[in-house]
Image (cartoon, rainbow, N blue to C red; front, side):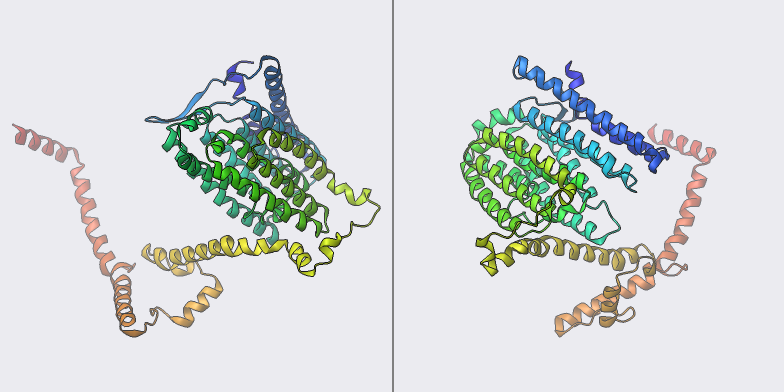
Length: 514
């Protein structure tokens, strides 16, 4: 296998998704009649990716660590250069093989599980996007390309949590998940910026060798951004509340996202950052209490759950906490083995979860005594220690309030400046009632005190100027004057565009020059 063909391996699932999407646009992939073709495309492309990863694994096993694949320049500006290339060290090959293999198994399971579902084709399109994104997270040879795969996996997660978009619960939980992970993405971008600033490179290999030249402060600043991304993606404290609400999607998406691959992406990023973390001992030690506390939290919350998927997701979260603890203890190789075994086992359990209720003949396992004997602890575990409410208060509600304020600004200010009637962009009913209660008609808000009256008079004057001089659409005011003047300017421009006037201007130019 030549170097050029290596770059095709993580692109194969994306090519399959593009093929499915094109069929959906043209109408050839729709309804039950098109399910077989969609499934074949997804399985073929992902299966070829598995085959390519197997070949890479065999080459690495027989020849040792493979040389880097040939890099293709994708973006270049000055000395800022982003390439398309593959990293083929042990963590990359392990995670890339897991991504392709788990993706193929999940797709095969979903063919029968989602038969005759209205969103069958949409599911396989998004799942192909996710598998390709996870392969780029594993195999990308530079930080920017890793982030692109990271974002592709994130947007796929959002789309499949909200798979049943006609249900408010699904869309709200998808929004919670994506908003929480935006904080992690911001940390990732900060890490990319500091990597380029401190090391003048974006390639992982140069980062690994260049961190030896950094002091602990600069290395810690770089590590902090990436660790925020890893903690958010793997649902570690304090971002632990979103993952239990992410199970609204179909079982295959829950299996591959939160049981197998998606939740493990943060842990993989920490393993990838091993050379950097050794230069930042504070953050290395920080991972131990965070991972341990997350494991304790997830174990307690999981024991109070009554459904199988919630119990499995908290078990996954607890195991991820232990993986972070192992990384903090410096056992990165152990953490990689732990991640590999847990990914495979948890995928199997999630895919089997729909059959658990039919296979199980025993009642649910009772709550352990240490939890049942403490009413307060049991209540906290049942409500997941109120982390959902905390995340809503800190992230979801402020974001929603900001969106409403932006919408109000757009409707009350920008729409009026553009001359668009207010009824074209109606406000929510409660906002309209509030506005009319305070300021009926076109009156401005009432002010109090001397400063309030000054502001009120100024606002009223500006409103009068806006209404009578600027926003008049019937030929009056400033707009009418500008329209009248613009007509004469247009006529002058037409005359100057005639050949005789162009010749006259050219002659005058030569006269001035000579």
